[in-house]
Length: 181
Image (cartoon, rainbow, N blue to C red; front, side, top):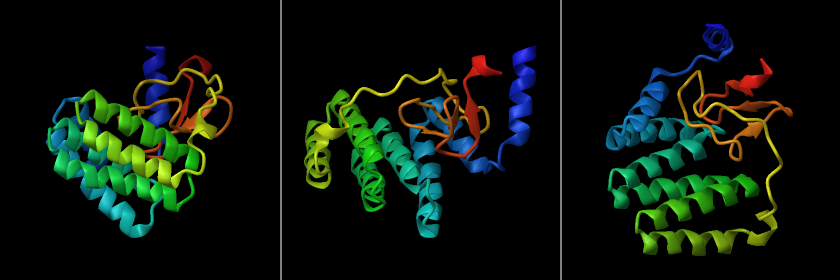
């Protein structure tokens, strides 16, 4: 009961979450990847047109959803656009993390040519790929999904606001270690 109250209180302080984002995350979690991809593509296009800081993440998620829906030809342009935006914005550590994750996931799905294509591009853009291989700092345990929008949370991919608070990359909600409340 106490934990549920905390989540409700946290939602009250969250920014206005677009329903399409919540719906896209829910569809992704339910395995409705084609539907999720369409929504993430819409969100990505709007964010990209505005120069929004979350546009790369939305493109990457749209690409992931298309790949999982076995629509590789539709997914690769979204993956590449997300990575390209990170490179243009000089967000090199994030570019490295997102690129390596894309390569690993493509390989896991047997898409070796696509993985090699991303890997080749990544090595041409990053000055020294091995500079980003340092072990990540120990971070608090986050919930697996954002309580506000339902997006997946990965401690090594979120932006940390302080030692115990991360920001959801999808909606901007602050997320704290559940044990810190």
